Amino acid sequence: MKDFVFKMPTRVHFGVGAVRKLPEICKGLGGKKLFIITGPNVAKSSAMAAVREALGSAGTEYEVYAGSVPDPPIEAVDAVTRIFAESGANMIVALGGGSPIDLAKAAAMLSTNGGSVADYLFGGTKTVAKPSVPLIAIPTTAGTGSEVTAASVITDTKNRIKLSVTHDYVIPKAALIDPQLQADTPALVTASTGMDALTHAIESYVSLNANPISDAMGIYAMRMIGENLRIAVADGGNMEARANMAVASLIAGVAFMNGGLGVVHGIAQAMGGIHHTPHGIANGVMLPYAMKRNLPGNFKKFGDIARALGKDTGGLPARDAARLSVDAVAELRMDIKVPRSLGDIGIEEKDFQGIIDATMPFRLLALNPCKLAESDVEGILRQALRAPI
Image (cartoon, rainbow, N blue to C red; front, side, top):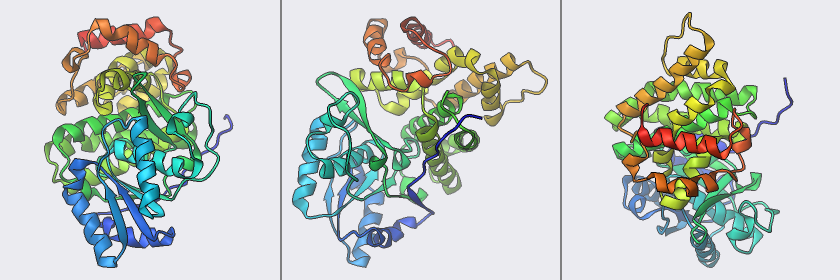
């Protein structure tokens, strides 16, 4: 067995109604005035109302920034960091999906390290050297796992590419997971973020950097998603399914922070930077096609994935069992009505070269179970354009 290091520094507080613990958690981390980063829709939601009620009842001082946008750009991080500095707050709370959490993670880091976030993105001129401002992440979707990971994904709009700041100091100090705050999530968002979580679990499981602990977490997350995502999409008020998906998303996040990712995320990140494709949708479209290409890299593990997602592989040769994992993901995607092809989301053959060019430098592509050339990525895209799966 190879040597490995496993990281899980975030303290997780889980439970229906757990939002009421927010003042106590903040106090324990030394919070005197909180700076809440969220988006305009969440700012008007029942989740925000619950946060306000919890903080108001405890007399906790706070200020709300509700200007987070999807795929936060460099300029937004730099701007919100300045607003935070002027607020007099000493702690950040992120409320929402992956975008506000990523924005908050980057702003918390930049507040202590200085400069522009562009300096710290992959390939930049600076390295994160100082601990971030204390950050509490409260996800309102079940998919990104950003509440427990070491990366903040930021968009370089000038170069039409999504890059990340990655460092242990970026990891939130605490994550508050309250399934009740996710009850109002629309069906399509539930479906797409659920596919994001499934992609994290699968890619980390077959990654060349996988270890026994990330494997255990990845396969468990797959089982939970396979058993609960359809229900959460069909009946958003089902708190058992919501709770299980919230936990599965978190577990998958920890798995990929330690095990790594692969070509699906490379392509999805490229699609997001160039075409502004929502990340979960991009992953959902691409996942089965990339899996099909990656099968020869680890038939055994893909067979495990098939079983975790409910397929009976008894007596089948390893290759045939592995192929059922692709079928299982495609069937799940169809049941929850996530787009099946690139054409369904407006991407055409003429867009391929830009996506390929942005995919190949993806830093985690080296962890993909099969070594891929540009022609392989093009082949995956062509499969997804025709949607035979």
